[in-house]
Image (cartoon, rainbow, N blue to C red; front, side, top):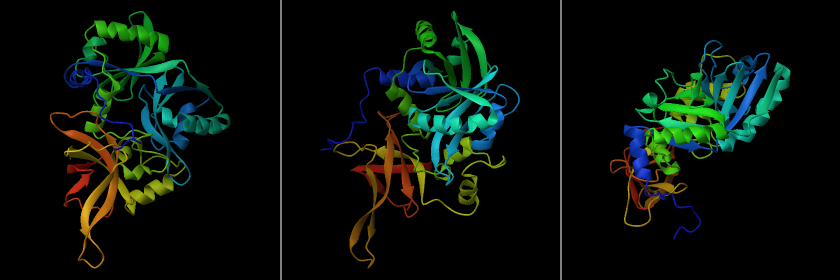
Length: 335
């Protein structure tokens, strides 16, 4: 009995319908845990480009996804940079918000930049292939933004590409509450946390605070390297470690997306060890080796497949069977 863990498979009756809307139509997803900061002043983009892992374009309305590292190259927070007229917005996961606020606040005075915590602002997502029609066909690339009126409320609309295409609306919570009702009445049903998490994990997209923590390096996740790191930009804290790990070595562990085949007992959960059969040093007595652990398990299956994210140590043999609890790990791709 795993009484010490919070059950992962807690989907409500509408979650599968919400997931179907995300995939095939359009669904509204409330994301109240996100934290929003505003940077304004002399050169906020210049300041960000001196400390972020990715390059923020100097011109245009396109922002960027990036990370803040400590001097040893470990991830302290991930964030999205969004351009909003005469200011820059920083959108973070709740687990990385305080670290982002501390680091940005440390550099802001030297760059003559003011940092403001927009505690009454939130993020509302509308995702799926029909989202564009419901918002009046805004043509936005990922992280590109535009100011628009939705109903009677003015909000910032930001293009989203992962885990599914659509848009994030950023603004005061009161305005987003009104817009949420309008979108639902227009034909976009609400999708719950479980539906969004299932879409995220199925797409192999890690989340800071769950799959990536301050113990991790960017190089341990292919998704992070591809989306959050520029190897052509100038220096930033932790850059030497990121470059050395990428060009000269291999991390001790890497993040993977798995397909799980549930067994006959309780399903695996985040934190469960990934096991692989082997032999002891004498090569004679069978042994069970711990080769990794799960960090996220999708709340419900997608087309009969249950997806999960987790780390595998370098010693893991991708060709040999693996399991978590009594669930078989059928396939793995780097995430």
